[in-house]
Image 1 (cartoon, rainbow, N blue to C red):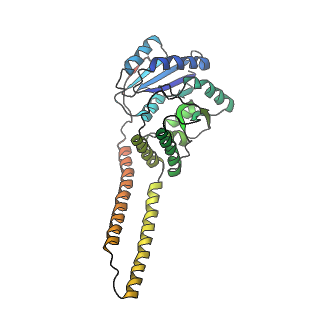
Image 2: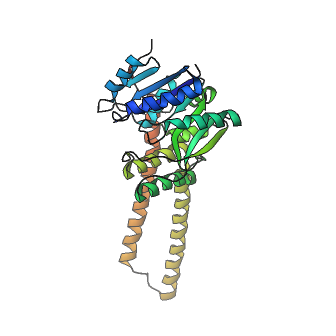
Image 3: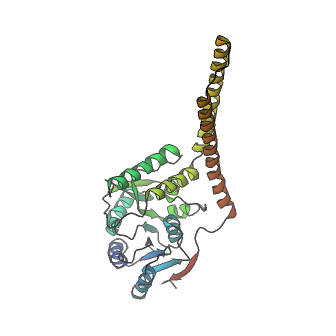
Length: 307
């Protein structure tokens, strides 16, 4: 099979019909009739599943992978990639903010450059000022705090070769940050500037973005643990210098230095620092706890539309 198209479904009922039509038109321009559309239902609470299954009855190229519950966008995408059969795989969101016809220029660049991945990068971030600022800040903090050279402002949409996807699926961690996995898998990856539309309010709230940043950093970097060491050294050095100051004042004035306020502030500062450090170590321990259990990161309840 020449081409597989993968998209996840979550509150996607209003977009499914148009998405199917537009992505099918783009697929025929690239691969003729030799393609499939893999839709992963990530426990959507609306009737996305029913509408997707209805598509399998009128289009034999549509495959619906129904997960047993909501596992999250990144895990659903990895599950969809695992169910593909094409030599080229086009991953895209189904909400139509990413245009299905990007497949054509992506495939042109893939053939021209002989690369393994062509991914979209936003020319200008969409949404309000808070959404643009937090989205831009996420990528910059991720690059600064981790060992992953993640491209700035990239989108979900990407065209990949079979060998790249096979290598990507070799990652078996349970706490998935797919953006980091895309980067560390390697191969020849090329960007293409795109203009993303804004058809709905983002589901990535400030809280979810922060949680994603924490997961990304603890998944791909030991920098917080190294930072703990250096901050501990700095606090110890400052304490030693302050001790020398206190002793010098005692010798100079022949009486001990008093100062209840400074003592309490020092205790609170040191106590808060210790608690924060224990929390950082706890994040890494919780990640180890999750990985050691080796639970599947998704469970497929049923597959519709494929014999």
